[in-house]
Image (cartoon, rainbow, N blue to C red; front, side):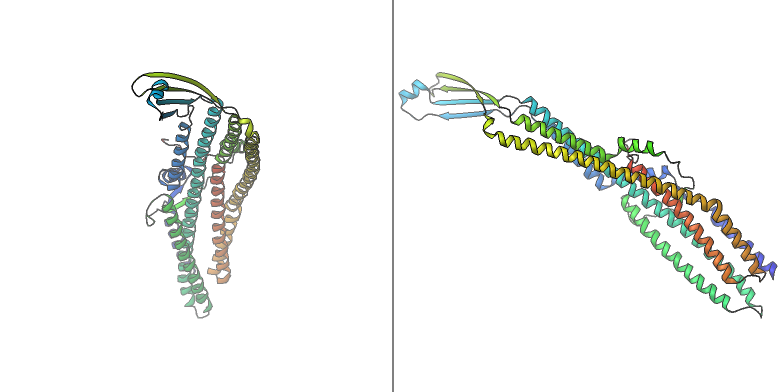
Length: 420
């Protein structure tokens, strides 16, 4: 009897090994980058952000140095003798002289707005990339758990066969079969739930990639070798230099400063030059008058001061928002680094200590059960512990990769470069 049972265990190990030979697609950083590139190339949010960037770029060229000239026409109704003396057709042309200071300030403001839009587009790319990375990692984790649960079901079916052989013994307990049937039903339901969850993650990923929701995605596997963590100082420097949110807010501050400078330029007098001619309708030229006109802005001095104060307050508010955002991002950075380190240590602990000991405990308990020195409940408990340990190891690995993706996004590393 014991020899027969050991043959069952050998068959179980061979079945598990055969499943391990199936090669799912490994979710490496390069694989994630490729999917992010596909999403960026087709996602409507990127198209919308690009359209806004193009609109802001056109606004730069819309800033005018010269105002449109004004053409005036007039006619005189009087006695012919008067019209012959003074002329009866008047033509006037006025041109405002360029306000170079105002032009430069408005050009800077439009340029800053275009840079804000460009940084916003980059932020949209980073957020989309992070969402794609998280979704594909959730899908890979679901596949890992499905494989674990499938292996566990194969193990349970083998145990059911062994229990059936044991039941032939008149002294055997009938409760073993009932316990196994209950455990098998529970694990079958868990596997079905995981498969439904996988369908959800696959549909979400397909939508992000602008594919049909029912597009098949091959089985995935987590990368067991996460990239090494860069030190916190280097990550903070990368965040400061490359984070698109900070870049957008800096450009907003530049635009607010340009707005304040434009408000100062608007309080200066506006000079225009003009010419007016009188001609008799009979065809004779009478005279021409040249004029210079200057606005008197001092009557609205309080209005201009209020506009300057408003623009400077907007600039100060933007600088305050920038400082607050920097602190918030630094806090997120520290949190993500801690999460990555904790999950890396947890994964290493499961791989190097917990799993080997749990597997040895299960093997010992199974051998004792075959020899009738342990109960089926002890075997099932040992198997549950092993299954939970493997699942927790995979969850820790997935969380480590998710933290990596978030660190890449927050430091500007997820930005897709067109043509590369």
